[in-house]
Amino acid sequence: MGIQYCHSFNDFRQLAKKRLPAPLFHYIDGGAEDEWTLKRNTEAFEQVALVPNALADLTGLDISTTVLGRKLSMPLFCAPTGMTRLFHPEGELAVARAASQLETYYSLSTLSTVSIEAIGQATTGPKMFQLYIHKDRSLTTEFIERCKAAHFDALCLTVDTLVTGNRERDKRTGLIMPPQLTAQSLLSFALHPLWAWNYLKGEKFELANLSTRLARSEQDLVSVMSYVTEQFDRGVVWRDAEAIIAQWGKPFAIKGIMSVADAKRAVEIGASAIMLSNHGGRQLEGCAAPFDVLPKIADAVGGQIEIIVDGGIRRGTHVLKALAMGATACSMGRSYLFPLAAGGQAGVERALGLLKAEIERNMILMGCQSLKDLDRDKVMRL
Ligand code: FNR
Image (cartoon, rainbow, N blue to C red; front, top):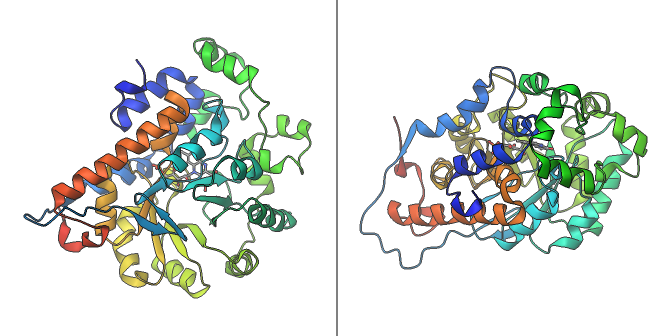
């Protein structure tokens, strides 16, 4: 079975499950603790239904929008995810190129396996860099200057990962980052020879943005989970975000905002966007779903700041529901990571193309010509 038979998130997920060693599949698929938040992220969309209008003139259908200073062909883009080369040898480059093909944002994680400079050279498409603030604050300044030189369009600061969430699946599967042949994982790697071959013959695993700071020996030894706990700065406050805005001078988003108070604070410090996110249910277990908190936040700050929603987006209709509730756009992680694992750049292009077609088709079925037509009258709570 190839990607041509994949028509939905679940199809890509099943194919990725076949292609990836079990610890890596579960690393993408899993969430924190009992995974209630992970499930809630998608289920929240099921508690709201769409209400279409009839006989609207739809000859000028347009689903393009502007997010963080760039025009996108659709209101959906790729959220940052770390260590992407583990899932496919083309890694971050494949996702960046696919996003560029579809004229939408690609977001590069601080913890990526391809560097800021390599992504800058690979595409002229919309691209943002996701910042984690390290205890060594000079790294933040360095990242910002590198992003300017590599012509990134936007920065986002992730604020929900001061410590890694308790992802019990990773403990059960014996996941070690980077993957190593342990007694527990050996069978799974042996059952996926293509993945193992690609991984072993490809470039060595490295945290590419940190290679100037970490000796190779450290990168081999440091498990990424303990890296987060050891290196990320828990003393980050709003003043720091303000300082980044001043140094960067271009569109800036805060990722991981979930409360009305924080959304208002983001407006006050001059952020361009807030990303309502619980990190795909991987961090605070029991956290509300972004779609659940969206209406209140949109009522408080809508029109003053762009509102991006991520978490549980699996269908074009999820995007339509979020926009009707007040979001500017949505982003997604697993909905491109499974297609990447299933089929590299071609897999991501296919998945993005299917989601774009779903948004277009369902806009027509909703009787909406432009994204502005999606308002609260187009949804009802069940
Ligand atoms: C993530 N996410 C993430 N976020 C971030 O700011 N920096 C990062 O390095 C990562 N890494 C990462 C790895 C993997 C495997 C996943 C699944 C997610 C979170 C990501 O940006 C986004 O918030 C969620 O993926 C959204 O949820 P869905 O779309 O996966 O349900």
